[in-house]
Length: 173
Image (tube, rainbow, N blue to C red; front, side):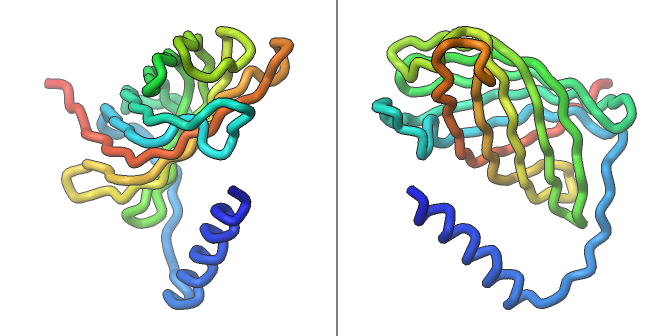
């Protein structure tokens, strides 16, 4: 699994060398449209601990109205082995030209099903998504998230998710 991460680092460095210097404007975005964000990918990537990886899907809502450029979000994730995680938290959008980096932080409840034992129901979730923003505000990207209980339960194996994401803007009348 460690080779996988080295491959990503080498590809990113090679891409930077081929592209040459890029002057991009970086901006933390204020209010904008709300988004419904869909994600599909892999649950428990690289964190086996005796538990297999499985497919997963995620549905997330991000409110476009922000307070000091930080907005609320809520979501649900389900994996192919019956695990479900519902959560609520905060996010920000950082624009780098047409690329949008969205870091997220949330808390929520996990129901294991026949999936990985994460040590207990209460869990924290940290994630980030990097997406291309089209002219109509639709975003297509890749996301990574980590769910962990931060040691508040006796067991804390954690799990990682890697997904392809599609965020569709929702505009209220």
